[in-house]
Length: 207
Image 1: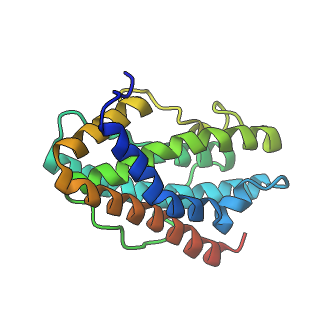
Image 2: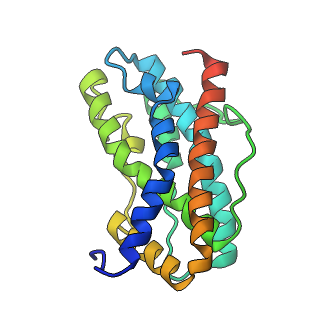
């Protein structure tokens, strides 16, 4: 499914532009920079995976709870934080998973607009994950089959492709223009939550 050449494409451009500063701040976070370091060690990679698992699983739970309430017919929620835990188990052995590394308040995710904004960030992270996956393969020899499923996004794909998701998102914004700002605010809040989580996790772990 390709994006239609209609005004919907204008919203996607606006969304990208108005969340760019948050996206770039997340990429410049210490945890992200450590992950992409050329001297990344396997022990550091495993610890960083714990951070990703904590941030993403919390957001996925919030989205799932809201999604069950709104039940938008064209919006799918594909969880993948469990892949980070599977990678951790593969690389370091099974653990009890008694608690997440940190407990930080998740941004409010209740309305359709808020779900769309949060899922935009979660789905979009798969694109960056592929870049990270290639990096950890080159530096550590990690593959999607051996400790790299999370960044490879290796799930049983039942959801929308990225282009299909963008089309559904843009169509929703066009049909509900009064909710467009809410989508942008939610996306920025989601980027901000992950950045704050990474920052607090870095302070705790001091990799």
